Image 1 (cartoon, rainbow, N blue to C red):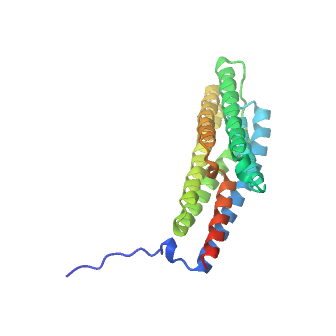
Image 2 (cartoon, rainbow, N blue to C red):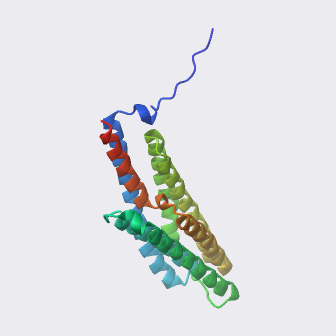
Length: 234
């Protein structure tokens, strides 16, 4: 006799009810909006604390978050135009160049730190901020990933991985700040800055290749297009 096999408790996206699909679309908007708002606060606090402590890693961490927010605004502005395709390449190139500039800035500051010309100081605010990000980013990623899977959206799932990567970045910066604070290892701050520089280059390359869905605004806009297309079929 054949044994009954386990069936998935989660329905595929194709059989989701209209009400459930609307709920998931609304949830995606909330998750992305919260992520953008947190990134903005994170950027302001990190840049201020990093400047006060002369921490390249903390400043870079804040600037990366700021570019992420600026990218979302730029893409949202692009799609508010009557002919968004006309501005797509210029928008993505601007985002890409911003990430490349960040990478160059961090590499230069890391070199100054390693040479002894720049000495990062203890930053309790920076440690608290990155520790908070280590907790918040994985939670947002988990929630977004599960929502994306139920909705059947590969883009939402991909963005959840991007959010998780930001969590890993927070871990690298936190370790650098802690090692510098506890043991006076200034080079740890420089190494963390170089990790962010590599991350920035990766983001710049993706933007240069035309991956607008890597930005939070891209997720929101794609979600709107999916919802309009779904309603158009009924």
